[in-house]
Amino acid sequence: MDISLTQSIRIKDKGIDVPLLDGTTAYFNNYWLRDNCPTSFDSQTRERTFDIFHEAEMPRPAKAEITDGALNIEWAGSGHVTKHELSFLAKYSKGTERPDPADLPRRAWYSNHYPAIARFSQPKLLEDKALVAKWVEAMLVEGVAIITDMPDSNEGLDNLAKLIGHIRPTFFGEYFDVRTHIKPTNLAYTAKALELHTDTPAEDVAPGVQFLHCRANSVSGGANLFLDGVAVANDLKKEFPEDFKILTETDVAYYCEHDHYDMRSRQRVIELDKHGEVSGVTISQHMFDISDLSQEFLDTFYPAFCRFGRMLQSDKYLMRFRLEATECIVFDNHRIVHGRAAYSATEGNRYLRGCYTDRGEMRSTYRALTTEGRFKG
Image (tube, rainbow, N blue to C red; front, side):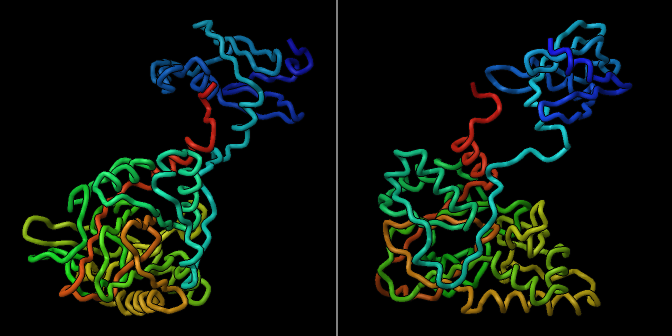
Protein backbone atom coordinates (compact mmCIF):
# COMPACT_ATOMS: atom_id res chain seq x y z
CA MET A 1 0.00 0.00 0.00
CA ASP A 2 1.21 3.51 -0.85
CA ILE A 3 0.73 5.08 2.58
CA SER A 4 1.35 8.71 1.56
CA LEU A 5 -1.14 8.60 -1.30
CA THR A 6 -3.68 6.60 0.69
CA GLN A 7 -3.56 9.19 3.48
CA SER A 8 -4.52 11.84 0.87
CA ILE A 9 -7.74 10.02 -0.05
CA ARG A 10 -10.87 11.78 1.20
CA ILE A 11 -14.12 9.79 1.26
CA LYS A 12 -16.91 12.33 0.89
CA ASP A 13 -20.70 12.16 0.92
CA LYS A 14 -21.16 11.29 -2.78
CA GLY A 15 -17.67 10.54 -3.99
CA ILE A 16 -13.94 10.36 -3.31
CA ASP A 17 -11.08 12.84 -3.62
CA VAL A 18 -8.27 10.82 -5.20
CA PRO A 19 -4.58 11.88 -5.44
CA LEU A 20 -3.27 11.32 -8.96
CA LEU A 21 0.24 10.51 -10.12
CA ASP A 22 0.93 14.07 -11.30
CA GLY A 23 0.47 15.41 -7.77
CA THR A 24 -3.04 16.80 -8.33
CA THR A 25 -6.21 15.61 -6.62
CA ALA A 26 -9.43 14.87 -8.50
CA TYR A 27 -12.96 14.13 -7.36
CA PHE A 28 -14.80 11.00 -8.58
CA ASN A 29 -18.47 10.20 -8.08
CA ASN A 30 -19.35 6.94 -6.26
CA TYR A 31 -21.81 5.80 -8.93
CA TRP A 32 -19.22 6.39 -11.65
CA LEU A 33 -16.48 4.52 -9.77
CA ARG A 34 -18.70 1.47 -9.24
CA ASP A 35 -20.35 1.57 -12.66
CA ASN A 36 -16.99 1.62 -14.45
CA CYS A 37 -15.26 -1.06 -12.39
CA PRO A 38 -13.20 -3.20 -14.81
CA THR A 39 -15.31 -6.19 -13.72
CA SER A 40 -18.40 -4.42 -15.09
CA PHE A 41 -17.42 -5.31 -18.65
CA ASP A 42 -17.55 -8.68 -20.40
CA SER A 43 -14.08 -9.62 -21.62
CA GLN A 44 -15.37 -11.12 -24.88
CA THR A 45 -18.20 -8.80 -25.96
CA ARG A 46 -16.61 -5.74 -24.26
CA GLU A 47 -20.11 -4.62 -23.27
CA ARG A 48 -21.10 -3.54 -19.80
CA THR A 49 -22.67 -6.40 -17.82
CA PHE A 50 -23.01 -4.66 -14.46
CA ASP A 51 -26.37 -2.90 -14.11
CA ILE A 52 -26.22 0.19 -11.92
CA PHE A 53 -30.03 0.32 -12.02
CA HIS A 54 -30.12 -2.65 -9.65
CA GLU A 55 -28.40 -0.63 -6.93
CA ALA A 56 -31.20 0.37 -4.54
CA GLU A 57 -29.01 3.04 -2.95
CA MET A 58 -25.92 5.00 -3.91
CA PRO A 59 -22.79 2.82 -3.70
CA ARG A 60 -20.68 3.75 -0.66
CA PRO A 61 -17.03 2.82 -0.10
CA ALA A 62 -16.26 1.00 3.13
CA LYS A 63 -12.59 1.75 2.60
CA ALA A 64 -10.23 2.95 -0.10
CA GLU A 65 -6.48 2.74 -0.52
CA ILE A 66 -3.84 3.12 -3.21
CA THR A 67 -1.54 0.21 -4.03
CA ASP A 68 0.92 -0.06 -6.91
CA GLY A 69 -0.51 2.95 -8.76
CA ALA A 70 -4.13 1.85 -8.45
CA LEU A 71 -7.11 2.94 -6.35
CA ASN A 72 -8.71 -0.03 -4.56
CA ILE A 73 -12.24 0.43 -3.20
CA GLU A 74 -14.13 -2.05 -1.05
CA TRP A 75 -17.84 -1.29 -1.35
CA ALA A 76 -20.03 -1.37 1.76
CA GLY A 77 -22.69 -4.07 1.84
CA SER A 78 -21.54 -6.13 -1.14
CA GLY A 79 -17.87 -6.31 -0.21
CA HIS A 80 -17.09 -6.01 -3.93
CA VAL A 81 -13.61 -4.61 -4.67
CA THR A 82 -13.04 -2.19 -7.52
CA LYS A 83 -9.52 -1.52 -8.79
CA HIS A 84 -8.93 1.57 -10.93
CA GLU A 85 -5.49 2.39 -12.29
CA LEU A 86 -4.64 5.99 -11.45
CA SER A 87 -3.57 6.51 -15.07
CA PHE A 88 -7.09 5.52 -16.13
CA LEU A 89 -8.72 7.86 -13.61
CA ALA A 90 -6.58 10.76 -14.83
CA LYS A 91 -8.18 10.50 -18.29
CA TYR A 92 -11.62 11.19 -16.78
CA SER A 93 -10.63 13.59 -14.01
CA LYS A 94 -11.59 16.85 -15.74
CA GLY A 95 -14.90 15.99 -17.36
CA THR A 96 -13.56 16.49 -20.88
CA GLU A 97 -14.81 14.48 -23.83
CA ARG A 98 -12.86 11.33 -24.64
CA PRO A 99 -10.43 12.05 -27.51
CA ASP A 100 -11.63 10.71 -30.85
CA PRO A 101 -8.93 9.73 -33.38
CA ALA A 102 -11.54 10.13 -36.16
CA ASP A 103 -12.22 13.76 -35.21
CA LEU A 104 -9.69 15.16 -37.66
CA PRO A 105 -9.63 18.79 -38.82
CA ARG A 106 -11.03 19.22 -42.31
CA ARG A 107 -8.87 20.69 -45.06
CA ALA A 108 -10.90 22.84 -47.45
CA TRP A 109 -10.09 22.66 -51.15
CA TYR A 110 -10.89 24.63 -54.27
CA SER A 111 -11.23 24.24 -58.06
CA ASN A 112 -7.57 23.33 -58.60
CA HIS A 113 -7.78 20.26 -56.34
CA TYR A 114 -8.22 17.54 -58.99
CA PRO A 115 -4.50 16.67 -59.46
CA ALA A 116 -4.11 16.43 -55.66
CA ILE A 117 -7.10 14.17 -54.97
CA ALA A 118 -6.01 11.15 -52.91
CA ARG A 119 -5.90 8.07 -55.15
CA PHE A 120 -5.80 4.42 -54.16
CA SER A 121 -5.77 1.17 -56.12
CA GLN A 122 -8.75 -1.08 -55.36
CA PRO A 123 -6.76 -4.36 -55.46
CA LYS A 124 -4.15 -2.91 -53.10
CA LEU A 125 -6.83 -1.67 -50.71
CA LEU A 126 -8.24 -5.20 -50.54
CA GLU A 127 -4.81 -6.47 -49.48
CA ASP A 128 -3.61 -3.75 -47.08
CA LYS A 129 -5.56 -2.53 -44.04
CA ALA A 130 -2.99 0.23 -43.44
CA LEU A 131 -3.80 1.59 -46.90
CA VAL A 132 -7.52 1.49 -46.04
CA ALA A 133 -6.75 3.67 -43.00
CA LYS A 134 -5.01 6.21 -45.27
CA TRP A 135 -7.99 6.18 -47.62
CA VAL A 136 -10.43 6.83 -44.78
CA GLU A 137 -8.16 9.56 -43.41
CA ALA A 138 -8.33 11.30 -46.79
CA MET A 139 -12.12 11.02 -46.64
CA LEU A 140 -12.24 12.52 -43.15
CA VAL A 141 -9.88 15.38 -43.98
CA GLU A 142 -10.75 16.24 -47.59
CA GLY A 143 -14.05 14.41 -48.10
CA VAL A 144 -13.15 12.82 -51.44
CA ALA A 145 -10.89 10.18 -52.98
CA ILE A 146 -10.59 8.36 -56.30
CA ILE A 147 -10.17 4.60 -56.38
CA THR A 148 -8.39 3.24 -59.45
CA ASP A 149 -8.01 -0.21 -61.06
CA MET A 150 -11.67 -1.08 -60.42
CA PRO A 151 -12.86 -4.32 -62.05
CA ASP A 152 -15.78 -4.06 -64.46
CA SER A 153 -18.16 -5.93 -62.17
CA ASN A 154 -20.83 -5.39 -59.55
CA GLU A 155 -18.66 -7.29 -57.08
CA GLY A 156 -15.82 -4.80 -57.50
CA LEU A 157 -17.92 -1.98 -56.06
CA ASP A 158 -19.42 -4.22 -53.40
CA ASN A 159 -15.99 -5.36 -52.17
CA LEU A 160 -14.71 -1.77 -52.08
CA ALA A 161 -17.64 -0.31 -50.15
CA LYS A 162 -17.56 -3.06 -47.54
CA LEU A 163 -13.99 -2.13 -46.62
CA ILE A 164 -15.39 0.84 -44.68
CA GLY A 165 -19.01 -0.11 -43.92
CA HIS A 166 -22.16 -1.96 -44.86
CA ILE A 167 -24.13 -0.98 -47.94
CA ARG A 168 -26.67 1.57 -46.78
CA PRO A 169 -29.98 1.32 -48.70
CA THR A 170 -32.05 4.35 -49.65
CA PHE A 171 -35.57 4.44 -51.05
CA PHE A 172 -33.91 3.84 -54.43
CA GLY A 173 -32.54 0.50 -53.15
CA GLU A 174 -29.07 -0.74 -52.22
CA TYR A 175 -27.49 0.22 -55.53
CA PHE A 176 -28.39 2.64 -58.31
CA ASP A 177 -27.42 2.72 -61.97
CA VAL A 178 -26.68 6.13 -63.47
CA ARG A 179 -27.48 5.91 -67.16
CA THR A 180 -30.31 7.01 -69.40
CA HIS A 181 -33.63 5.35 -68.49
CA ILE A 182 -36.68 5.17 -70.73
CA LYS A 183 -38.95 6.37 -67.91
CA PRO A 184 -36.62 8.21 -65.53
CA THR A 185 -37.62 8.98 -61.94
CA ASN A 186 -34.54 11.12 -61.34
CA LEU A 187 -32.62 13.68 -63.39
CA ALA A 188 -29.49 11.56 -62.97
CA TYR A 189 -31.16 8.93 -65.17
CA THR A 190 -31.28 11.29 -68.17
CA ALA A 191 -28.63 12.86 -70.39
CA LYS A 192 -29.55 16.33 -69.14
CA ALA A 193 -27.29 18.50 -67.03
CA LEU A 194 -27.52 17.60 -63.37
CA GLU A 195 -27.50 20.63 -61.10
CA LEU A 196 -25.11 20.77 -58.16
CA HIS A 197 -26.52 18.91 -55.16
CA THR A 198 -26.02 16.51 -52.30
CA ASP A 199 -27.89 13.21 -52.58
CA THR A 200 -31.23 12.20 -51.03
CA PRO A 201 -31.79 15.30 -48.85
CA ALA A 202 -35.42 14.20 -48.46
CA GLU A 203 -34.36 11.34 -46.17
CA ASP A 204 -34.38 12.04 -42.42
CA VAL A 205 -30.69 11.12 -42.33
CA ALA A 206 -29.14 11.15 -45.78
CA PRO A 207 -26.47 8.51 -46.42
CA GLY A 208 -23.01 9.73 -45.51
CA VAL A 209 -20.57 8.25 -48.02
CA GLN A 210 -21.29 7.92 -51.74
CA PHE A 211 -19.56 5.65 -54.26
CA LEU A 212 -19.78 6.25 -58.03
CA HIS A 213 -18.07 3.48 -59.99
CA CYS A 214 -17.55 4.37 -63.64
CA ARG A 215 -18.08 1.25 -65.76
CA ALA A 216 -18.18 2.99 -69.14
CA ASN A 217 -17.73 6.54 -70.40
CA SER A 218 -17.36 6.99 -74.14
CA VAL A 219 -19.92 9.79 -74.66
CA SER A 220 -19.31 13.39 -75.58
CA GLY A 221 -19.79 15.75 -72.65
CA GLY A 222 -20.95 14.69 -69.20
CA ALA A 223 -18.09 16.28 -67.26
CA ASN A 224 -18.18 15.61 -63.52
CA LEU A 225 -18.64 18.70 -61.36
CA PHE A 226 -17.46 18.55 -57.74
CA LEU A 227 -16.83 21.14 -55.04
CA ASP A 228 -16.11 21.30 -51.33
CA GLY A 229 -19.16 22.61 -49.45
CA VAL A 230 -16.96 23.31 -46.43
CA ALA A 231 -14.81 25.74 -48.45
CA VAL A 232 -17.84 27.61 -49.78
CA ALA A 233 -19.62 27.76 -46.41
CA ASN A 234 -16.46 28.97 -44.65
CA ASP A 235 -16.15 31.80 -47.17
CA LEU A 236 -19.83 32.68 -46.74
CA LYS A 237 -19.23 32.92 -42.98
CA LYS A 238 -16.34 35.36 -43.51
CA GLU A 239 -18.03 37.52 -46.14
CA PHE A 240 -21.72 37.36 -45.17
CA PRO A 241 -22.02 36.26 -41.54
CA GLU A 242 -25.74 37.04 -41.31
CA ASP A 243 -26.48 34.84 -44.32
CA PHE A 244 -24.35 32.10 -42.78
CA LYS A 245 -26.28 32.33 -39.52
CA ILE A 246 -29.62 31.98 -41.32
CA LEU A 247 -28.50 28.89 -43.25
CA THR A 248 -27.12 27.20 -40.13
CA GLU A 249 -30.28 27.80 -38.09
CA THR A 250 -33.18 27.32 -40.55
CA ASP A 251 -34.83 23.95 -41.15
CA VAL A 252 -35.39 23.74 -44.90
CA ALA A 253 -37.96 21.39 -46.45
CA TYR A 254 -36.82 18.84 -49.06
CA TYR A 255 -38.92 16.29 -50.91
CA CYS A 256 -38.73 13.41 -53.37
CA GLU A 257 -42.10 12.37 -54.72
CA HIS A 258 -43.16 9.92 -57.41
CA ASP A 259 -45.88 7.31 -57.97
CA HIS A 260 -44.76 4.95 -55.19
CA TYR A 261 -42.94 7.15 -52.67
CA ASP A 262 -43.31 10.49 -50.96
CA MET A 263 -40.16 11.33 -49.00
CA ARG A 264 -39.99 14.51 -46.91
CA SER A 265 -37.50 15.95 -44.45
CA ARG A 266 -36.19 19.20 -43.01
CA GLN A 267 -32.46 19.89 -43.05
CA ARG A 268 -30.04 22.71 -42.31
CA VAL A 269 -28.37 23.96 -45.49
CA ILE A 270 -25.09 24.40 -43.62
CA GLU A 271 -24.22 21.84 -40.95
CA LEU A 272 -21.98 22.53 -37.94
CA ASP A 273 -20.09 19.98 -35.86
CA LYS A 274 -19.68 19.85 -32.08
CA HIS A 275 -16.85 22.39 -32.33
CA GLY A 276 -19.05 24.89 -34.16
CA GLU A 277 -17.06 24.31 -37.37
CA VAL A 278 -18.67 23.69 -40.75
CA SER A 279 -18.98 19.94 -41.24
CA GLY A 280 -20.92 19.99 -44.49
CA VAL A 281 -23.95 21.11 -46.42
CA THR A 282 -27.29 19.77 -47.58
CA ILE A 283 -28.34 21.34 -50.84
CA SER A 284 -30.46 20.26 -53.80
CA GLN A 285 -32.37 22.78 -55.84
CA HIS A 286 -34.33 20.10 -57.70
CA MET A 287 -35.45 18.54 -54.38
CA PHE A 288 -36.03 21.85 -52.54
CA ASP A 289 -39.69 21.68 -51.52
CA ILE A 290 -42.24 24.47 -51.92
CA SER A 291 -41.28 26.39 -48.81
CA ASP A 292 -43.86 26.66 -46.05
CA LEU A 293 -41.78 29.12 -44.04
CA SER A 294 -43.50 32.41 -43.28
CA GLN A 295 -43.52 34.78 -46.23
CA GLU A 296 -42.03 37.54 -44.08
CA PHE A 297 -39.09 35.30 -43.09
CA LEU A 298 -38.56 34.37 -46.75
CA ASP A 299 -37.75 38.05 -47.37
CA THR A 300 -34.56 37.32 -45.43
CA PHE A 301 -34.05 33.63 -46.21
CA TYR A 302 -34.17 33.69 -50.00
CA PRO A 303 -31.38 36.28 -50.49
CA ALA A 304 -29.10 34.23 -48.20
CA PHE A 305 -30.07 30.94 -49.87
CA CYS A 306 -29.57 32.31 -53.38
CA ARG A 307 -26.26 33.97 -52.50
CA PHE A 308 -24.95 30.62 -51.24
CA GLY A 309 -26.27 28.86 -54.35
CA ARG A 310 -24.51 31.32 -56.63
CA MET A 311 -21.27 30.85 -54.70
CA LEU A 312 -21.53 27.09 -55.28
CA GLN A 313 -21.39 27.73 -59.03
CA SER A 314 -18.29 29.92 -58.86
CA ASP A 315 -15.16 28.88 -60.74
CA LYS A 316 -13.26 29.50 -57.50
CA TYR A 317 -14.68 26.28 -56.07
CA LEU A 318 -15.88 24.13 -58.97
CA MET A 319 -13.67 21.21 -59.97
CA ARG A 320 -14.37 19.87 -63.46
CA PHE A 321 -13.02 16.53 -64.64
CA ARG A 322 -13.97 13.35 -66.47
CA LEU A 323 -14.35 10.12 -64.54
CA GLU A 324 -13.05 7.24 -66.61
CA ALA A 325 -13.90 3.55 -66.70
CA THR A 326 -12.05 1.60 -63.94
CA GLU A 327 -12.31 4.62 -61.62
CA CYS A 328 -14.60 5.07 -58.62
CA ILE A 329 -15.01 8.41 -56.90
CA VAL A 330 -15.90 8.16 -53.20
CA PHE A 331 -17.04 11.22 -51.31
CA ASP A 332 -18.74 12.57 -48.21
CA ASN A 333 -22.37 13.16 -49.22
CA HIS A 334 -22.81 15.63 -46.36
CA ARG A 335 -19.91 17.76 -47.57
CA ILE A 336 -19.15 17.34 -51.25
CA VAL A 337 -21.58 18.98 -53.68
CA HIS A 338 -21.62 17.35 -57.09
CA GLY A 339 -23.30 17.52 -60.47
CA ARG A 340 -22.82 16.72 -64.13
CA ALA A 341 -22.73 18.54 -67.43
CA ALA A 342 -25.14 17.41 -70.14
CA TYR A 343 -23.97 14.77 -72.58
CA SER A 344 -25.01 13.22 -75.88
CA ALA A 345 -26.89 9.93 -75.44
CA THR A 346 -26.94 9.21 -79.18
CA GLU A 347 -23.40 7.88 -79.37
CA GLY A 348 -21.15 6.05 -76.97
CA ASN A 349 -22.05 4.67 -73.56
CA ARG A 350 -22.03 6.20 -70.08
CA TYR A 351 -22.69 3.99 -67.09
CA LEU A 352 -21.95 4.61 -63.40
CA ARG A 353 -23.03 2.25 -60.65
CA GLY A 354 -23.43 3.76 -57.22
CA CYS A 355 -24.10 2.92 -53.59
CA TYR A 356 -23.74 4.42 -50.12
CA THR A 357 -22.30 3.61 -46.73
CA ASP A 358 -22.57 5.59 -43.48
CA ARG A 359 -20.13 8.16 -42.11
CA GLY A 360 -20.44 6.70 -38.61
CA GLU A 361 -19.24 3.30 -39.83
CA MET A 362 -16.40 4.95 -41.73
CA ARG A 363 -15.22 6.71 -38.58
CA SER A 364 -15.56 3.43 -36.67
CA THR A 365 -13.36 1.69 -39.24
CA TYR A 366 -10.73 4.40 -38.89
CA ARG A 367 -10.67 4.13 -35.10
CA ALA A 368 -10.39 0.34 -35.24
CA LEU A 369 -7.55 0.49 -37.78
CA THR A 370 -5.51 3.20 -36.07
CA THR A 371 -5.92 2.71 -32.31
CA GLU A 372 -5.81 -0.17 -29.85
CA GLY A 373 -9.03 0.79 -28.08
CA ARG A 374 -9.72 0.31 -24.39
CA PHE A 375 -10.37 -3.42 -24.28
CA LYS A 376 -7.63 -4.92 -26.41
CA GLY A 377 -4.90 -6.64 -24.49
